[in-house]
Amino acid sequence: MTHASTDSRTPPRGLVARHGAQLMAGVGVVIAATLVVVLGHPHLQSPDLTPVLEASTPIRIHLGAAVICLALGAIQMLSPKGTLPHRLIGWVWVLLMMLLAGTSIFIKVIFPGHFSYIHLLTAWVLLITPLAVMAARRGNIAMHARSMTGLFYLGLITAGAFTFMPGRILYKVFFGG
Figure 1 (cartoon, rainbow, N blue to C red):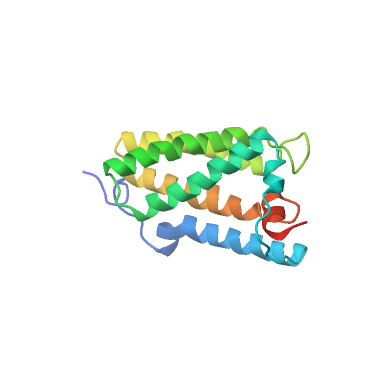
Figure 2 (tube, rainbow, N blue to C red):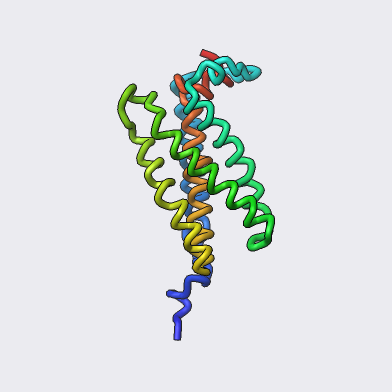
């Protein structure tokens, strides 16, 4: 007999258990936005894609994959789960997330020529993404849902928010400088 607390299909209880990834992503976005305002004094402008067009190939691939993952991830979060469209979009999303993480290995801008703290996220994405797929294939839907939600909110939303810090490419695209 399986207890409800150990059943992988039992939804977690409590606000933090159910929405921990979203709460952490929200905190990350607030921190990133505060840093942008405090450090950069930004004035939003119409986007200038020159920094993207002048960026290295890994950065352009990384950015393209991130934008598509963000859109597909939002669709996944809002759509019914377990359907054929969910699975098809999910496979595309997983492949793009692996491409996103893979290209980040070649992006060494924060500490030129060296890995930085953001590469810890790369390792996390490369580990969690296949584990999340395996969880779904093995029927552990609760683990799959937690992992994919974490990848979306922490791996895309929070990490993406930090790309708007002064000196980074997306900051230059939207705020100049």
